[in-house]
Image 1 (tube, rainbow, N blue to C red):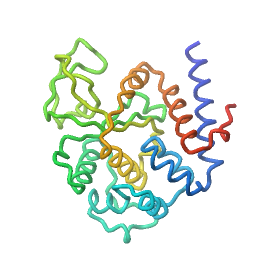
Image 2: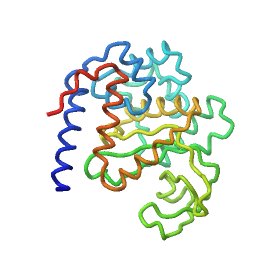
Image 3: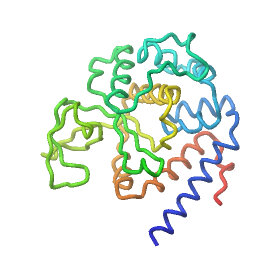
Image 4: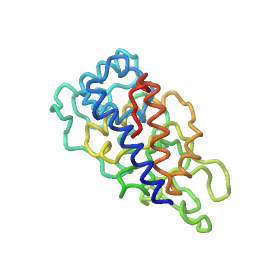
Length: 255
């Protein structure tokens, strides 16, 4: 029965993403604007619609976004946006959350955030083998944390930025005191975070949401579902929400 439901959710998810692959090329201007406001969860729509970095950067400026793709390339990569190749690759793609966090911190620092070093990008990678990852941007007041293991709640661990497990989100420390504040999160196909151009869009959307300083406490319930193996339900729920935000809900066909 579990296998049946996984296959069912997979078919639903494929139908949702087919909307981005096949029905939204290109996105209309108002849909791009709505996607910008939706934040990181809209990343697959920008990617699958083949919206260029230059077009997206222009729409970020028109939307009065605090941070544009130009700002991201300047701050994170120290590279002039006008000089980037068509594919956006300047050989600075990240392959771990430590590097991703450093890019994010540099962007926030360029915007005058007082303590950018306390913001991190985290990931829950339990569904990576199936092609999906759960990303969250958090504010964490401590650089050394004492927490319970995410997969063994009886195991305590002390983590620093040198430990891969440090780059997971933790709601509380091992004394049950509140710790991470989630300001943005997204359930994404792994392929949507593989190239520097895609990562630049993710960083830009995420940094803008951080500047809003609106906590997204719904993340914790979705993370529990993700860890429990119900990642496809999280993906489908998010995709429906983003589709509605973009005003294209009538285009989704569940097959």
